[in-house]
Amino acid sequence: MILPMQGAPAAKIDRTSLARAEALARRHFGIAGSVSVLSSERDETFLIRAADGCGYILKIAAADERADVLQFQSDALAHLSTKRLVVPVPRPVASANGEMLVSVPSREGPRIMRVLTYLEGMLLSHAPRQKTQLAALGRALASIGEGLADFHTVVPRQELVWDLCRAWSLHDLVPFVETARRPLVTKVLDAYGLARGALHELPRQVIHNDFNPHNILVDPAMPEKVTGIIDFGDMVEAPAVNDLAVALAYHVFSGPGLEDVATIVRAYAAIRPLSRLELAVLPTLVRTRLAMTIVISEWRSSRQPENSRYILRNHAAALAGLAKLADWSDDELGRFFQDMMGDRS
Image (cartoon, rainbow, N blue to C red; front, side, top):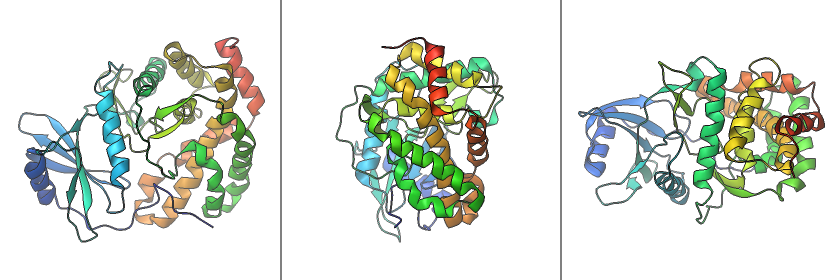
């Protein structure tokens, strides 16, 4: 039986006009300016350019989004705003009443609105890949991990579809995958199931959980320079190494061999050292994330065909990544990481 999970395709919503979005931002947050629509899978997302040139992101959640989950995300960003990060992240903007979340009426029921600061830059997915850029990614991810390490709060109980710790449950969604690919993803999910016990021994914390090229900004003039990290909507409390596994899954397919992956891991470990166990489970986690991308993308695309281009944007890379890793066993990949980093106690 397919169970409902946080992050499932949203029901069709009554779209907010640009005029209403501008009026809501002005009324509740005191922000006025030109408004444009940004692509988003679940929230309605708008960019507001104020007269002084500052940019703001206005997000209006679907009516079924939970307030405690959105508050958790806002609190995490507020926590990170107190840290000296390698690269900036959006800051939550308080409303005129001093609240981060504002309820607004709609025909579907109350919807939660919030505002974040806008970060300038080009999406990494649109930028050329460079070796120095990869090292910057590893450092940026490790910096966010360090910033969240002491973020202690009551983490909302949710069944997030993108949570690596819940990958086993995606067996229920395999029937949505194209028939020829089902044995491939099933094999990966089965291997993850055998390794789940080791995950309980890993250090845990709140993590970003979605460090992909569509959530990373770089300088258009100097693409090797990372200028910001966005979209904290998939944050979970999980093994810290899961964050690195997610990031690596988006780079396995690129470059010769696994040199790109090695560059990211070395840069990450220079800030946040990895234990021997973390290095040992990393291959399984990377492969599992690739399989998750295939399963979830094809499931969501089948439910929202009108948005399939956006939903499937990482699908081809995930397939290429799994194909590239097919010549490596998890044990061989584990030894590769161990040799690359040296012996770990």
